[in-house]
Length: 181
Ligand code: IMP
Image (tube, rainbow, N blue to C red; front, side, top):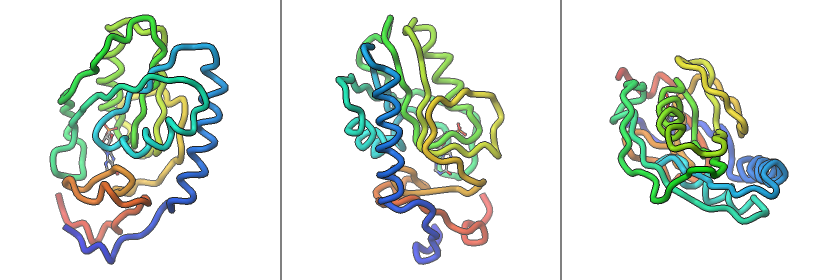
């Protein structure tokens, strides 16, 4: 595990909060009059969901979908597993997937294919971070907080081997501090 002192801050709490306020206003406008379910992709998106849902000025339902794709490393294995399914049907509902970060796109592709079989009225994607450099499959992101360079980021829900999720900001370890994996 790298030393926390070598951590570089990418987005501060204040910058994240301001961006989420704008995303919330856009979502509120675009889903007016519709029944919206926010599906939080666990674990990494839980702080984003908590802040984003309070920036949305209309009634929404909240669901959680547990997904595991990385193991303990910093590279995608490409193997996606549902660890906790939705508690309620999404048939004929408008679903907005809430993700922490889209990297290869493999996780979202798997989730989209799975949830589409349940016949929702629509499925949108809202991600806090988009890291297009590593994309391996195409996914259409509807709402994106920030587009980031190819860093492995942590904090604000995102982990390195399950650590750092509770940092209030988003940071990264310069590659030379991460070692090989
Ligand atoms: P993808 O399947 O490669 O798009 O990765 C999606 C998931 O991998 C995200 O929801 C995160 O949980 C995790 N992930 C991808 N990149 C990072 C990162 O830079 N830091 C922490 N987690 C990441």
